[in-house]
Image (tube, rainbow, N blue to C red; front, side):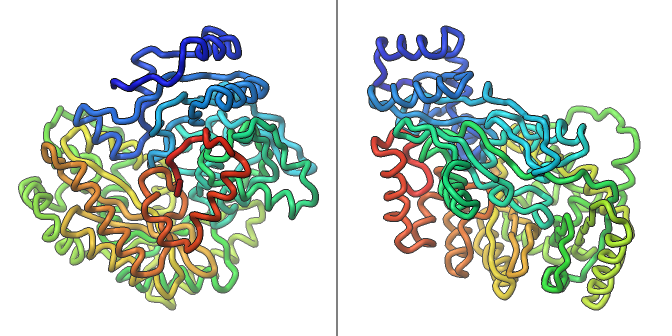
Length: 521
């Protein structure tokens, strides 16, 4: 954790004068905690007893004025500021790659009363997603943004990463929900986009900040669109023989104008993981206390695999030879599960939409599984992300990659990425966040962490996967952001994008103090 300090004691004293003695920390425990987010590679570094990017201090402003003063001081003293929400990002977006101070906005966590006329509410960037949603729910509303990280992610982080929630098919991604933003530029100016002209002009300004990952300034508040809380929820599960037929059904669903709240298709192995024989019933029964078990494969099976599908001995051997395991997964019985949810407040309309969807699915060869799979998914919708830590504790690593492509490219993209990653790690996928013109593929892969080789294996997996993405002409990312992890891939997707983004950066942050080294900078 040794790093040459660039921030003098005199500057630290000025910071304390701005935020008070309790608003600044250089405690080793805090330095350690803020030296990473949930990027799997940063977790691998910790397992290897490495902390490449420690901050020099952490600061917790409690007012907008304090944020302005901190940015102006950073300009004056020439040190980096790294905005930090809840640290749930998975792309290294909050790592202090060039030292400096992490600016944690958790104290800016206000949540306003909903405005029933404009159907909006105001939120501070530090408001935790679940608490914000619970407050809206209490008053009969919903934000409609349900990332799997909702329990540990912040509203500001959603905006900074241009995130998507599980119900984006109905409510849109976060960029569709933002009405206006308040932020402090890297030049120390406080801007409220609500004052920037017509709604179209305001939205254009918003889009320059949404997804900028703190490289343009610090988000200090936002007004979001909200929706009436749905009173009717109709869920369904349909099994298709393979990925291609399930995707055909999804495409036709959106092409005729239907907008289900949720539409998620799981490939054969992901279907077994989430909906395997007996799994749905077992989730509703009291859980028996399990004896502690050691080993990567045993724990992975306990949490993700369906007991009895494959023996532990076979799995232990196969994860050492991922190509073979991936081939076996392609021949698993059971088909591909498509979960759909229609929700709202007019039962007649929802039932008509659900019936139209069922007719499309039947024409595409789908077999109706009733409402149980949909209810099962709704119950466990945020659980999977919290199982990954046990993989790391057991000697492996797990990561996810979300990319998107048009419908005519989506099957090829799925196959090419699986083919590219198969020699390096076990891989499975589901399809979600669908649109009229295409959808997102959410890949999950797991590898065995060998001493001294995990970082290089991790990089080989990502190079192989993104190489396949580029060859198909698909997107580098759909909703996790860019951070450090995808920065090297982004210029290849956006010809001229580097110069364009640098021009925006120069306008908002001429001293280049805001979160350096992220996105394509």
